[in-house]
Length: 266
Image 1 (spheres, rainbow, N blue to C red):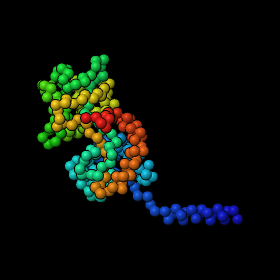
Image 2 (tube, one colour):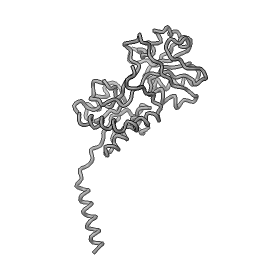
Image 3 (spheres, rainbow, N blue to C red):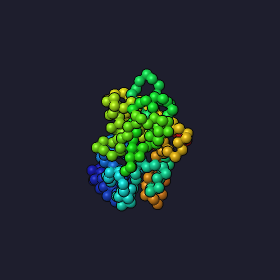
Image 4 (cartoon, rainbow, N blue to C red):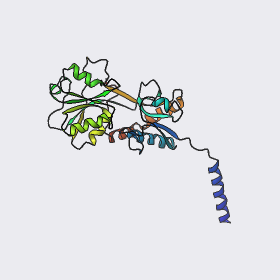
């Protein structure tokens, strides 16, 4: 009798499970080879944040992989292949964005020495050092630190690193620092922190505030999550997630050495 009841209960449970609707996966748009942000093996910090979101929502995690180049949003979110981009500028116009979950800045990377690092762009050492800067766009324009260096008269020894290449510009800059080919480099914060952590020589990462006279070249950016425009339900759910799990997100960012500024930073 007991065995028959057990079998009956098991059948009822199986039937109930079979009637449960499948859980809608969290579909994330990401670059398959763009560390420290994302990688197809899940080793980027945006991968880990996506895993945290999916676990919090209690749903499976799926990816739509595409190199983060021109047309990325149109070919992923716009094509309906996915629902979430984990990292976008908080004021990005092509997506509906959550509240920011971190703010970072361009930072100075240099060999770890006993000497105090520069605290302003007026430091005379910056006019003597070989300083690397990232170059962006088809016209290889200097990033904001390059403009700040030029304004301070530090132009003779500046070395530009185009973003395009077999390796990210940040990785090439840190390698040049490790080989002694550069004395310092201004690198976008998340990349600076990650590659400095993995450098073969001790490096330090330091925030140097932009000069007050450089008004049209922002150094820091707030980063949010982006969803399809009009998908307010997912945006609001993610806003709630960020509010509840900010401490967990901060721990992930710290694991990758991401330099962060207060939200009120200039």
